[in-house]
Image (cartoon, rainbow, N blue to C red; front, side, top):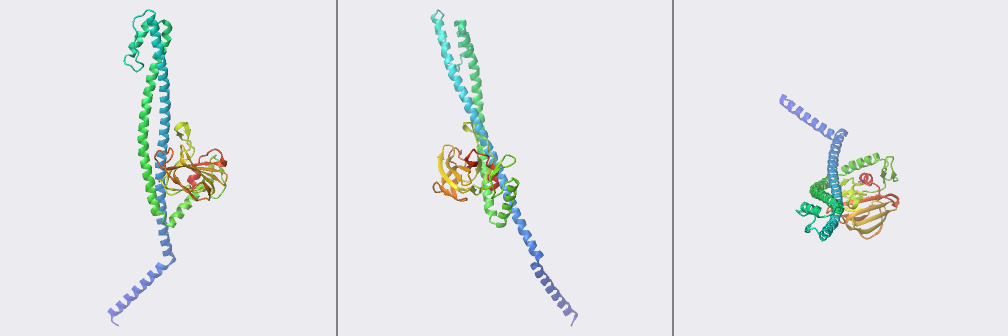
Length: 363
């Protein structure tokens, strides 16, 4: 065999051997492990992307709900100041009448002229007061002093009311801006979850993290409910009350209109999002002035759960199983045109407790 032919033969043998090695390598456990690790990494990255989007949605929603609380507080302050102004104006009106009567009596007794009183708002207020001082007796001095002091107080309260109105107007503008941002973040989260949660591995990773976080609170997914050592009530028996993407705000105890305190958790999510029974029990549908379309769920576990601001109910009041659809998110009642779920937990049919730890762990 010639030298050239021997070289070509060895080359072909070498190529064949390399091909065999490649095939064996691709089929080997180490290569399968590498492919698995690559898939796991992609799933972990997708799960991290979802978690980051959820954090942004939560932060934006919390800021919006905080702005709402501030707005309610400013409304309370404005209402209180307006009531003070109205009371002072009523008192001023009565004092003005008293002063005029003093002037009339003095005129009848011989003094010349009756000052024309145009009230505390008139430009000639000080001139009127000076004239009155000249024609009334010493016995009327206390009335005039009270009149002057009231005028100063009323002017101060009116300035305070004007400033309160300006702060409220600015708070409304701030709230609207934060509302738009929060809704945009929730929508963005919805888009990311719709894309990434198609992967079962991603769902498994997120569920494992959720369970780990729940364990850190001292709760158990299927365990009993009760107060933890830190005084927080934790309901480990509930499902997440909604099905979809949302932003959370821990608004427990925040001031609300009418001097109330917020007794639930607010969850910002899209209109029409499904709401489910967090436990089995009897769902009773009603309409309330503040909550609009509402559901009271009397759980078989002895607790009561309250859902507010629904756009619609599913079916009628009835016995339900855990996970049954009972309604849809909306903005009825005093929801300010912001679709969200107001959710409460009342242990043993008693007073409401902060539901945020329980709901956040369940969702």
